[in-house]
Image 1: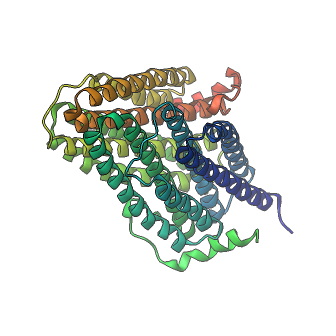
Image 2 (image 1 turned 135 degrees about the vertical axis):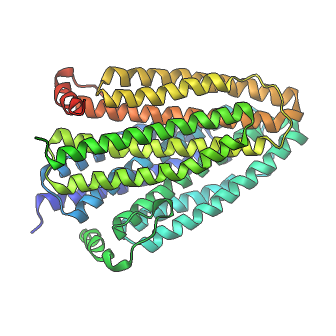
Image 3 (image 1 turned 120 degrees about the horizontal axis):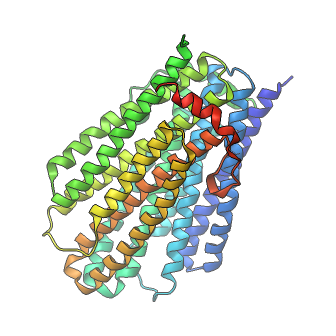
Length: 236
Length: 236
């Protein structure tokens, strides 16, 4: 029989996944809005932010209640702390989507120009990072989380390339400066989403391995993965 | 007589303050490096990041140990959770300082140009926000934290002004595009530091008032401020 505490942990996990879905959707919508110059989607992103903020609060309150409810075992404690951190990152992913939407709203008043940057490709890579970081959390798999850390290097490189080509464009075609700057800032927002996905992956590794791998700290062995994996698979 | 748990809480508070000092110093150094085109200070910022990352880990581990040590009272639980969130924000303040330092390292290879943006003034405003957000935490004063939230609007306005004047400069003097872009990105980094200070202030209010005021949620009255203030004054 499941205790009220265990049910609370399940609920926390479900709420976080829902929050992750909202954040990912916001980024996808904002990028699609950029590609299509679509103000309707911008509006959807702005409206969706309210729901993301409400979800963040609910998750934090539930985490607090669970910690206050009883003395959690170390593995559950680590899980709850990981959730509160992932929660904060997902909320900020939503903020980045809002930034992109606001940039698009600025951009549509300017003539459309062809720019040497593939925001669609960058957006796809970043969305995949967010999705996989959440998968690594659901499945409590440090290897999946590790793959997210590697994808972050790819996104950083895309951002650097975008930076170089767009500055060149600004110099060669000064009449497109505003649009090139918008594209550059959207690329930076996407890079920041990738950074949040990286933070999430690091938190997952911290939770699963029971060790802190942030900032290249030495990793502990796999011997400790079992408890967290057991905790994670309880809902399945 | 103070219990080991209470001593742990004091240690947590001291470590967080030290971390805050490091993060603030990093931002000040990075901005001074920008103003003076000073690569030595850039190097100091890059080296300082290691210490900030170590501090972040130590604080998280201590928070975890305290939560695992005994069933904390609600007020202590709220304090510990606030510390872990503030900790994450301070680490990211350090990241922004590194971004600024990297921007300066890019910039010094270009000719110095006079730009219509006052990074020094923006930097002073942002540093004050970080400092006051930490003061509001030490003194457990929601009013101080509230003042930080209001300063954030001022910084946002500075960033918007910088954006407008620098884009104008890029159009009028295309030969300064790279430098103007560097200035614009430094302004954005500073705005982001201000956002972290805002997050910290919100966490302080959450802790002091025992209610979540993020995202303009309704605030609870002052009746609940006493316990947190008492907890905060224990070290003094």
